[in-house]
Image 1 (cartoon, rainbow, N blue to C red):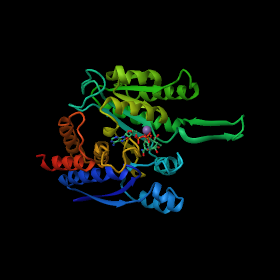
Image 2 (cartoon, protein in one colour):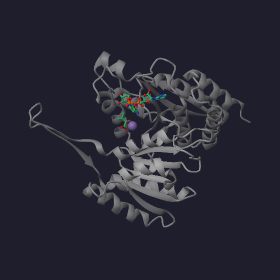
Image 3 (cartoon, helix red, strand yellow):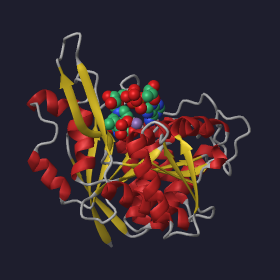
Image 4 (tube, protein in one colour):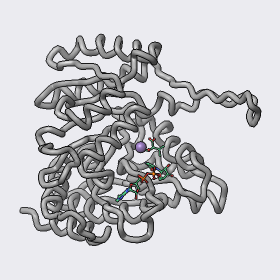
Length: 351
Ligand code: NAD
Ligand code: IPM
Ligand code: MN
């Protein structure tokens, strides 16, 4: 049997609760396909920061780099100033490990009630390819005259030809593999003219390599609306870091909620470990109560299995989730660990 070395960062809030269930289901699915998962857990997040003032010690970063992949719950805690853990841990991992593709499927599973009247699984099946290392997240900018009436805060959006091109090429390749073969660039080129024109030009140029893919463009504000009233417009969506963050929360909302939305932070070349995590955060409002839905974290493990080249195990895991989602009733209150147990049992029982 092959063994995969997986670094696990449970993180803050509901992170540890959902990761425990994710691992439970992952291990069963992997075992069915002759894959053993060897996990090393890293205690990073609010507790470490309070104890040591560190978010990601260099020695830990180096150890993480020696794993095939990272599985993360969530980071962020109300007792830590906003941004310290988000930037110092989560974004640092995305940047250091060059996770330039932030892959976020938006799918409505059969039986899941969408808040969009009449929406069917055929209507909502998209793949958002969000840029992961640039844009307004890059950390460019600063504050002048802090605390004065003339304070100025700038937060520049960094868009490099190299960074945009490699992401766009990845998105086209994904679109070419899908039945609809449609790619929509989501940006705001009517206002963000410097960056928008670069993205448009790169899409045009790279698109010439993929004549079979049909290309569309949508301003991000209109895209936010179309996600809600015409989601079937979209197949593959390629977009910048911040727009992608926002529209994938909308994507989660229209497909049954943030508790179901999975993501992968991918370093396609494989130089660094890719990282898999739910789209949601640490949900301090429900942490420690066994109320968190672990499904997003479980589905992120399916993305991990795909990344590891074990698609049969990924489909097995998704099938278990699909079957579980069909049994849900509005207002039902299964605990986090109960959902994990049920999913693991389904994976084990499948023929
Ligand atoms: P959040 O996703 O943590 O929570 C938003 C709402 O969704 C809350 O009401 C929460 O209870 C609910 N929710 C989230 N996950 C759920 C689940 N699995 N099951 C059921 N309900 C769920 O977003 P927020 O409140 O904006 O942020 C809280 C903290 O998490 C902040 O510190 C933020 O920076 C951080 N954050 C981290 C990540 C990450 O680690 N990738 C992502 C988003 C936010
Ligand atoms: C996400 C989160 C992160 C982001 C934050 C916590 C840095 O919202 O993964 O969607 O903005 O990318
Ligand atoms: Mn987000």
